[in-house]
Image (cartoon, rainbow, N blue to C red; front, side, top):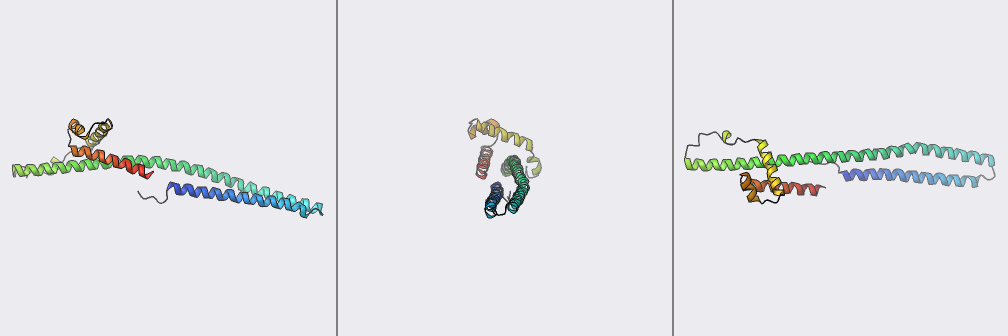
Length: 197
């Protein structure tokens, strides 16, 4: 699956947005404080005008702070919501990857069985001459996917119980190559999953 942007990319973007908002508010409040402290010293001579301008500066600063406060809250809420959505997407992707892994193993098992059946058919045709030449291949390659999935689960269960490949093949009465294929594919998928994190 092709990703346009990784989760880490979006987390970094959110961090920079929040950081820039914080920096803007910090610089703005420092400037307002500086204006507030400079204003009284400039207008000590004019009490009426100085207090009036100070009140205007304070009112303007408080108005701006009131306008910025909802923006900061909204950005924080958006970041939390975005984080929750990313976690949901990760869970969904993991479920889809597991289902896809299972399907791929099933397909490989079916292909392996088809190859084995084809080899057996060719061997029998050589031994019996034309006796099997008239049989349609569709009848010979008839097997169910449900049975394959069940065998796959049995193979993995026995492998996790520390049975070796030959014992598993003998117990389940399936070719050793199929057992080895299932185990190898499962190992590959687990490694790919670890590397993608």
